Image (cartoon, rainbow, N blue to C red; front, side):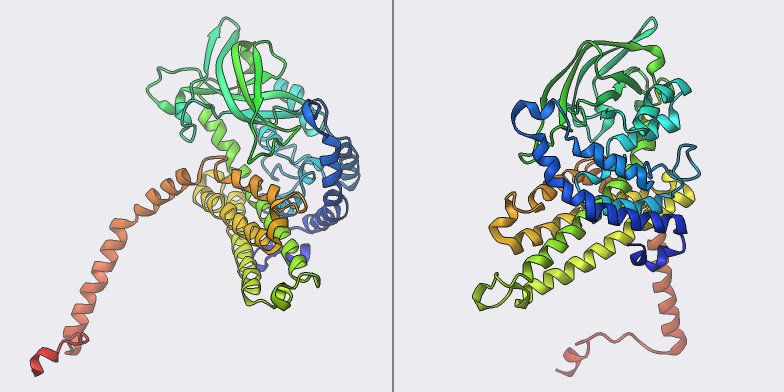
Length: 450
């Protein structure tokens, strides 16, 4: 794996990271991917799917710790809890983790825990870190992130309605959240919740706060688990959760009242890079399955193997180009985050966030097509991979929000480029006069000859 680092990035990857990258590849290929169907089988069927978690994950965690593959995501130089890798270095690891369902959790680098751990590490008090960050980093518990709501357009987070009122030494929460990923897991012990604490504030970005809510707090009801194209993702799940007079200590607030947007933006930037690199890993795995399929000697439509049909080789070539191009977009964003911070890399993060899922869906769809009907059933991982990646066009802000912001910022160059083009045209006219030539247009002399 380390020998395939793009040349433009290789000098930024330490020897330690290269060795770890090779270990990640070996661990994922030889232990995690083979364990994926075991994980699925251990989940079982029916309501009991939500009462336990597959034991195979504990064995994988033990092995990951033994190999030193643990909590690689916290970037070096920003967190004392960091394992010592940059965003770029972890991004390369995340790509391979994206090939397996169990791999991210096996190395304690699974969403939403990674983003939640960053919140605790960056903004939490020492008491909050001791109570929640330590067990999360040890892989003893899991967590959920609750922001999206069913009754509002949550793509604009200023719309959220869950109320958060101060009563004495407590915050009281009322409202509902959904797509609360991770809420179904019996190991989920803490929710990080965004709610409206100061609805009267004239600054709409100062009305929200983030508060820590233990999952067993009275007044919380998990109404249902939402499916993703029919997949319920048990035991992880995506919960629809209601809060009725849920009380937590005032000390459970993160950073302070009205700091919600600041926290959320700090949480989501690097997370979008993690999602994007895992999606590239999924695309790579889909391409691998397609290569296996088109080289299967038993599959000979119209008397030829699939690889002998020109359109199939075109799919392979396009997939290779698109994956490699997308990887460079993401690594460029990771480098800019490392060098300048997430706030200075918003454009690059947004480019990766929009481009990569679309690319991965295209590659996966080609692989599905190469398998025919087998590609849309449980006989390959392709259908579930497609459903999972499709969510990324909505998660962490829908594509349209990022495109609108990018378009608005790019359009700010309008006056500048207009002035430049007009000056270039003016200079051209001066040069016409200087050299005594005129502009010739096709057909301009036809009428004069008639």
